[in-house]
Length: 576
Image (cartoon, rainbow, N blue to C red; front, side, top):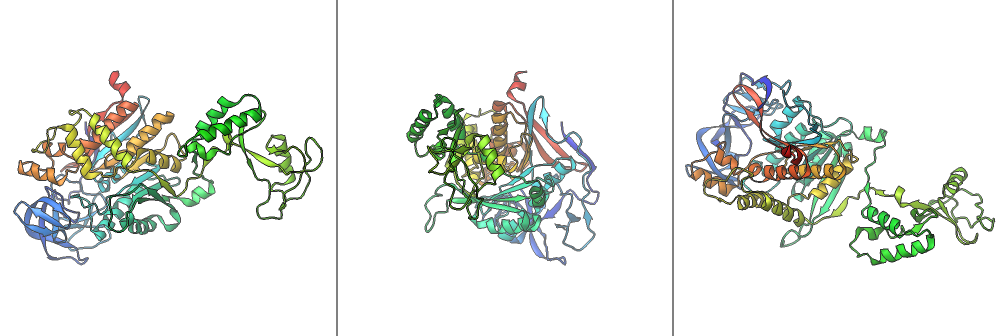
């Protein structure tokens, strides 16, 4: 049943209004005829036209006109949501809250509560996830009104896509588009430990950095992570193989006060530990020889190979590598350390001891010092792998993009053709091929769920109850990553993913020729959510025994409504 926001829509807001968002197929637009307010906002006052397609910087209409995007204003259809903090002049236009215009302005009434849509948690012992069809600019205020607070917001905005999207590709329009959604998403973050991760490429990275610095403060910047994903086609000059992840902390002062550290397991540490247990024969010397031979047998690509220094055993079978005892900068401590066999002082480091005498006494008592055969050589520390199994992440990593694309294609191939509404409009009757076509159009390189899981775990210290917001969900990779994290460690992390149910331009033209329009069943069945995101996440939820709710943001003449259009139960729930 629908989840209602028990707040009436503002009385002054008409059901048809104008907005400067990018046109999309099915919209009604008017040509701008002049500038009629003090802020310079162009308001469409010409004859209305229906949009057939949007390609590059031009709009094609049913009347055969080709109009530059900068010369049109969208007349949004009845039922589209008016954001709560947007100022409106009835029937003349919409401007941002900082922009003044002619006529009487009314600010949309903010929602006070969201009945029936409480923050996600555990349902029948299984983590909950929510997929919302709608614009983030609309959905975020409603999530805030219902009390949702997130530990991390992930933004993977579209940028210079070349596709016929409702999102703006023009640089200034993109900056405004991104800023609005960033502000609304960050309002939902935990005020102390909240983190923002922005996936972006070279063309928009500088803009995203400047805008996010302005919103969160430059001091909130944590790192610019470089993802080398392999060659992107055959470039004429330079093949750009990398993308970026901009990472920000909402409250860096809180993190410093609480000495927050982001660490991750060393790759291969589990395998090395398991092998050490298997090879330990009670004798440190022979066990070390076996461990050394095992490391040599590993391929260069095996992550465990990088831990080859961990091949020594103490008398109890604990694996360690040797560490330094000297003071790196010189002027270390000066004292004697007697050899346990000869009783004479061992050779001290030339720069002095790194540790104070009392610390050295504790290390000796805890079996953390390696002695040589006699006192003529210095000592070393024992760095045990079971205490050194974590590492700080570096800002550059490599993971091929094509792996995620192949995995998504394989997933879509396994979804039954009746898992989502059938396509119409003459495009394709094969559900699998239709999904593949939609996915290929929008997602050349979908995000790798393993990469996402790694950085989500780092930024939330792998807390089992962390909550995530995916602002531009696309194919739903982040939600799947969170589900996989839960399955790996029996966690109960939750996530909310927001995306539009966009239809590729070619299918949109076919649907319009067949007489269909945005909002009707045939049109919506051909969209991104119904063809890719929803069936993918429903399948994963069933496989991993988690709970997925699906809703859409709807605005009508009466109340704001988040319409719950479906629920994917887990495998266990379905069996029950």
